[in-house]
Length: 374
Image (tube, rainbow, N blue to C red; front, side, top):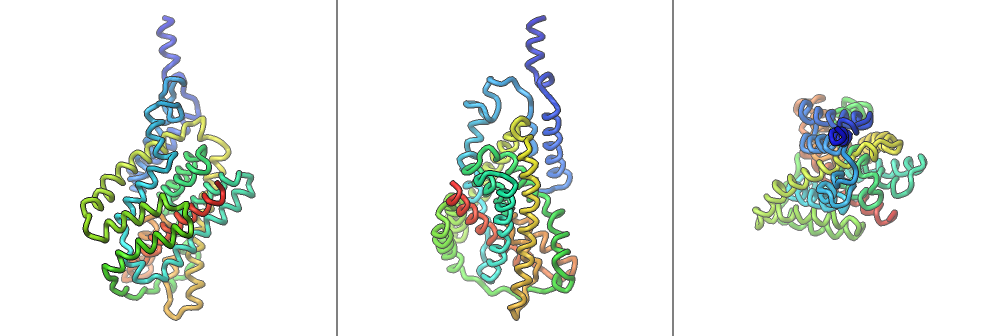
């Protein structure tokens, strides 16, 4: 009987409390968004299931939890805390990114840069609310709407906040169809949404091959701390456009990025153990993350409208919303909004130009914050 009682007191049924039930609800909600709503399933499904795995109650000291040394989850989590997984994801993103539209209209880079204003506004807000400088920098990067970049910077500055920051970043990325359309409608007129963008000029293969080299030097000289992200990003891109290592490029944009995404999602989800995740700071992070994402969207839209005041060739202001680096969600949403106003208005390629520049911009901002706050 004593052995039976000892066994029962070591089960998850006995050890569970209300915090575990709350986290299971969050995990199931993520699974619902991924499966039923098809919101970023490649990200939300592994994260959601990871939340379930990380919140199965267990007897401490057995080497089971993600924060216990020598546990399997702890070793897998090593790729998050060191920034390995985000760098691998950027390698795959580079191998998938087509810079043709960006090179055809370099002016659109400005919209990608303008959308990063949400990062710096949120940094000041987080400091005003009492967060430490390193914590505030980690929270601010949510405004870039780039999950891997958020995880990478947080691992360097405030590793104890990886769980809530990663969950916030990926949540808002998945909720782009809900968050961005009202902001786009509020800040643009129907006439502005109907503006057609001119056809893009042809871009040569030589330009495409030169760009990742020039981009590497320009960006990494400006923010050397962004090398782990942008170095792999531009390397993946030159593999793609050079045409001489198609096998490597294909592996980078399929098997490698998929593997990294699986481990990244599951371990980030598992890091949300109830006793670590459910704190007052987590609530503040979700609040500030929503503000960061909204301001990033709004600043891109407003900057596009300002450009139109001084430009003969008008830019559709909707493109400013795609400056956040949630690839390709924000570009797709901009395209859909343009089609609703005018079924013949195709903005996708122009939006992808802003989107890809937003990826670069958020990584540069992460490098700048890291170099200042470390």
